[in-house]
Image (tube, rainbow, N blue to C red):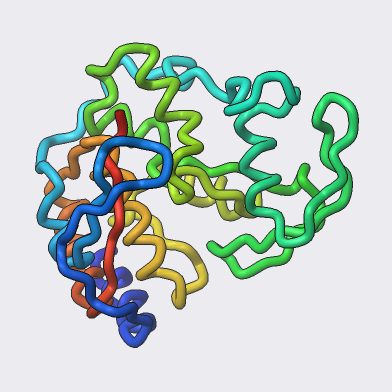
Length: 225
């Protein structure tokens, strides 16, 4: 598996962004500072701990809830689809979405039906549970499962790509489009840092190797309330 990860990472080694020193900056609607660090440094900020699946049930994370504006009838899933649409869909009564066009970045596919999309939790619910969310309150797990305040926490992708990923971490699964590996790893690490989630030893080794093939890549994250 790790050999495959190295091969995928090398394919994206030239995809870089300008280096930014670790400096806090106020995020738009919150008091907590946002931090930008190199991907390599961000990986080493992750707490290391063994994963524990005991007691996990998907229903432990209430989703989708009423979203940011309950009055509009659109739940969190619909709000993500509306925010990420390249060509906006028509919003019908009951927040049913008609038409529209989306780019599924995991597998580089255009999707023209909301029904063909899944909204993926960047760090899957089961992985979050294994990595510390089992100790959270129900309210915090609901906040995690419906996190609209960080644009990388939830991502609209093809149902096929999302179901291929399932609850696997980057030691087990990477997007089939190799060119987006650096982006994906950055968003994974940023989500874990945002929510204070841990990484196990195998996951950390994979992330460290992948980050080495993404020179100059940065991670920006804001700790969740």
